[in-house]
Length: 451
Image (tube, rainbow, N blue to C red; front, side):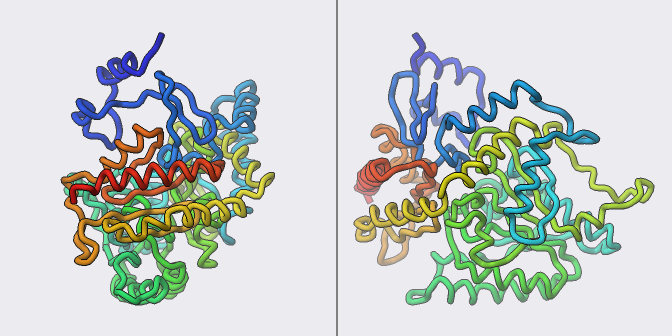
């Protein structure tokens, strides 16, 4: 009979895990999972875990969803994969038609990749190449926000600003122009989110005006800087940014890889600012958490800049072997079916309110500096000294203590430093939320009792 110990020993002999210091597993056991159902995961010893982070933010409708399962079984019987260069297939056509219809207005073309980082690479190259095809060879730079994260391939790292991921590889990276984030955690006492976001935009406006001659695009995560400790800002910043990019002739690339498909309360976060980007990157929840797939949507203007006779050598030749994989596209179509068939966004609004109400007692905790929320993303920021604004030293790994406590109580959290966050599948219910909040509250008490 298989047990956790059986699989852990085998794993540690051959597997190198992502975003992990492997030496930690000398004292922090791996959790081998044998099945998932709804919001629950189960290991080989029969222990269950509430997946409060949607398995790295990808799972929308719970594990082993019967509708998506059935769609994939049917697709397996007809076509598992075919190259998308010179060929096509029904799932990718159908998905593209639907995405163009659902996305912010003006985005008419879908270019597929395998994951979020790859989508960012596509977007950066697409913007640069567009300007090159227009004879604007001086446009080679990008503006990004401080504390931003766009992935871990070299181009994506270059336009990110989380030192933990980027610093080691800095010698390999192109140089981006970084401006201060509108992060509302940093607002002055008495200042509101909107006021702070407007004030912070003036630095971006100045940078756009100074560097317009050499800029391809600005790239932002809308409303929530997810890997940047779930820091949030007001939609007005996006509206101002759209206007300013238009004024200076610079593309706006919006990275909705984590925020898309209902995470922030609307299908896309852009909707809350009533804007359309020039390039939109989607991934993670695109397939409901089933298979790797990402997509970059562009305007017709960008697409037409590459449309020419072959001899002009202006085509966009970026490619991935599994581009537009039929199985992944089928999972994505099934996920969109669920959005059409069920009142997902209105139910999420109710769940979000319930989550926020459930954590209210933590506002008075002496080591909780802020509770913030954007739709189905809720973050609780721990602090060493609330009166002085003194954070815990990262070396103390307070968030990891919460993680360990929660696992022992059957809840999967994966804090970002000293920020505990909830990003659950949309099928979570009130009882699950009550459990999640109770375990998190106890975990925070446990992690901060030696402040």
